[in-house]
Image (tube, rainbow, N blue to C red; front, side, top):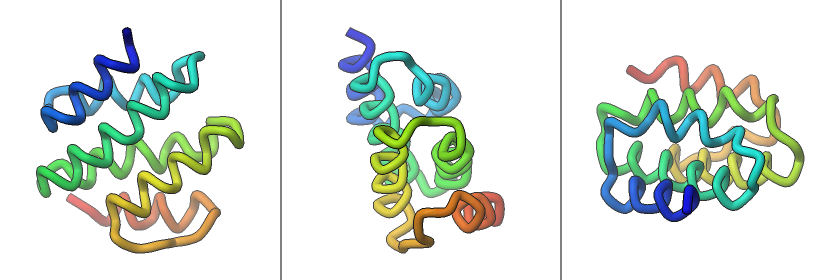
Length: 100
């Protein structure tokens, strides 16, 4: 149910859900965390003013999640940015913190 809710928030591109979706990146269930990552990237793509907030949520979680989630977060960041800053969290964090 949480995964469907996270996905729905992404489909709706609900800007009010960014913080909640960021918290769900740490959910014990992988499907919930992956749906949250995709939803965050979509919100950032749909609403330019939210790109920085969504990028910071995704990049900030890179060092805190396991390898199974890390690759998905990197994919969401690549999709959001339209670029590839590699596997290390530091360049992603630097990029995210430069955004408004």
